Image: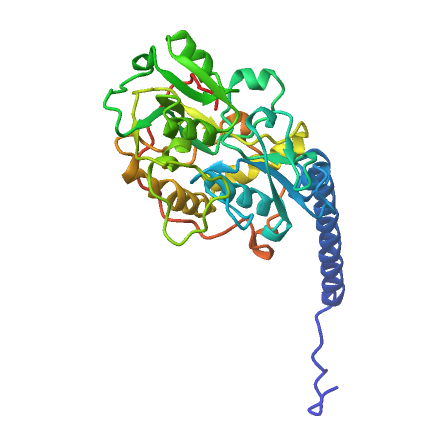
Length: 371
């Protein structure tokens, strides 16, 4: 009773039972939701794409302390070893980019010089002179069908360039196509198909394992021309950027060179030899995919601008390389499992989207000189 003699107000009959039933239904719904989430996670984890960490484990990278990468050591602007032992160039920056995405920062990356003939076997020379098997090869390695058939496991392409020719600037004989080299002594990489093409065109082809050897023979007058990929030759034509350390590979009797656009409508697409491990290939392709099509392309563009675009003025009219990263084809695309909350908890790989690239890539055909 209230103090006024009225019955105390209380919940209507049945309200308490209704509230209790509602709480029980809500609790059951929450339990069911948790069960559904757990089941979905287990199903996706079992049947869906692997996570990035699972790929790293399958590639043998979990717990690995150092990533060994075979690179060229005598290609200015692409990959060159300096007097202090460090490496610089476009390929080096791409290698660092991929290594970072694989979980290896710069101090845990070791570059080893690799010769052209050893790239397929991934055999590079260690500082003590021993040959060791590297994890990756990033060495101006053109993707060709023949190399694929021979067992090279290429990644998606990371650069598009084309075959070209350099001569001494004092040589006034024009080179508008490879046929103009008929009867001349021409040096090229011994393991490339360009050596065979030159012979078929009537040139006196000389194959060398190192492009610096070809350029030295050009300086010496032993050969009349050198041909290989334009991105490789461009670094020998223009001056070195000021303030950089001298290269370890020294060339003598240096002369002014001329870069000829031979009108080749065929692409040279460079790829990474990723080893036979499919998980390693997927990780490398994932890095290139995020760089080419995702919000992470500023790293590729910075490397291109610093080392290749800067060489363009000295190499006109020959285009050094296409100023846009090739997009991976359907066969090179990789899917990884990433839960929605990881997009907010983990900053990588969701970096700010860079500005749209400038310039238009030229479309090329498929025949390759196979540098």
